[in-house]
Length: 114
Length: 110
Image (cartoon, rainbow over all chains, first blue to last red; front, side, top):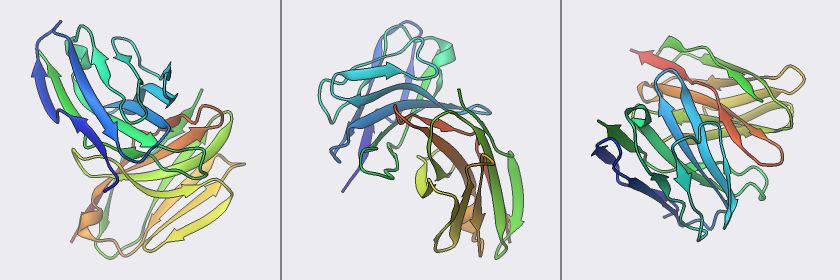
């Protein structure tokens, strides 16, 4: 089954404790992104990657890091989480080079930083 | 930059038709997507328009006018399960980044 898998689904952590949210896709997509979704603000892009070893900042990259060492994986790293990073996070993948390629989203990670 | 505007909420009756509008301003337009998102769940793809006109997919249709920077999603024969947020997203040419509107919450009542 074609899917994007995020882990964990829920996470409560403390300020300053480094964490990683994993994202994996099995569709051989070149393009992967991370978004955060907050009430009243919609989905905002954090980082994106057009292919292996190619990553770039989205609209709200501060406080986040990513890496793309393999095509299927695109982890999101919070080196020193703060309460304002409490949010619902989505990973997505697509293959834009193949015409109208919609983004497939993972199930989301609800992060609470206390 | 990109600016995408959607109304926030509407209520409609089961069996009715509802139209959700989206206006946008962007440089390097490379297509517009509509997604459905139930509360707490992942967005799921509904439709895509890159040329002007109407795309029909079952009970859902989407329209695009590039010159007006305008799209709408039409939901026909509304069902209770259509209660969700509907997101419009514009893709930018070159880096293929998607910029999302804030979503329009549709509440379907019996």
